Length: 381
Image (tube, rainbow, N blue to C red; front, side, top):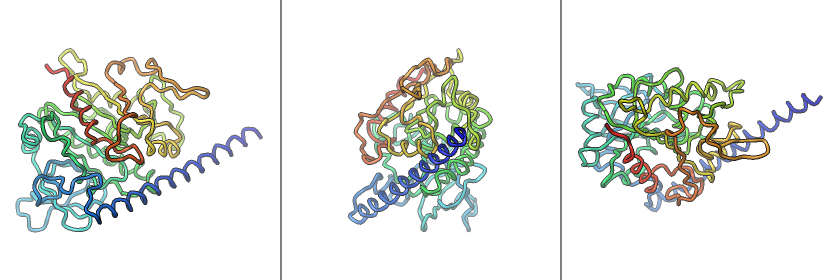
């Protein structure tokens, strides 16, 4: 009877958690939709600038990567013009695009970019002519009409990094969180792996990676599912990471029954993930994996209820989630990772764009200062 009671209790708490998670997520969507509509009516910028591109002709003029399936535009003789819809699914490959135009509700037109041109655009940056591309993988519930309107102006000026948004098919519906986690993000991860395996590493000899929220899941559980992608990044920034807290631990939780493919096999995936750090001639990482975490992150609190696991972006690496006490101990981190993985606690930082949920801070000015500071610490040969 005791065992049966425990099972019933666990099932009950799981159902309650999922209902609570859905309710909070639905509130978040409704809240921001109304807030954004109100601000749009008054001409006030929401989280984005009124023109993300420097050229007013385009929705976004700069370089992007997308995994969303594209189709050749009718009448484009050279095949350089393509179209895509933000409601479409991920394709099997990813590609570079520029000169993004919105031509309808969720409909976009763009120009395909060759590897050589992509290298030139990223190197030129915002005029520095010596920029390092920072590939930025967005999170859950973000569509191109949102991600390409983020305010990238904080990257301008005397900055090392040039932002390259990585756009994957996110359905833009919080009620479908688990579908995103199980299907769309995994497909995007596979498509991104196909892209990086196709791109010679010397195309971008210097490059870094930033993942926000579920974008961390796209790379860790999707692109690194079976092997290390053939790509090397100087630094990897995990911002508000919606992945389990023990991802880089020596003895991570693996007792999954239904969701093992999605969240399990952490030790192997972590090995593949760390394999993406660029190495010096003596085979030591040039940079680090940086984890920006915030203990006031409301979205990741919600994710905890949905996944029944504390999230990395809520507590950082080295967190011990005990029955009677919680604490930090770097000894739980895998030995080969220690020294090359660093917590950055941003809980006391002022949230410039997301004061309600303390989650979307990846483009705040202080966050970009962190990326720049860490870039300057990279070991170059």
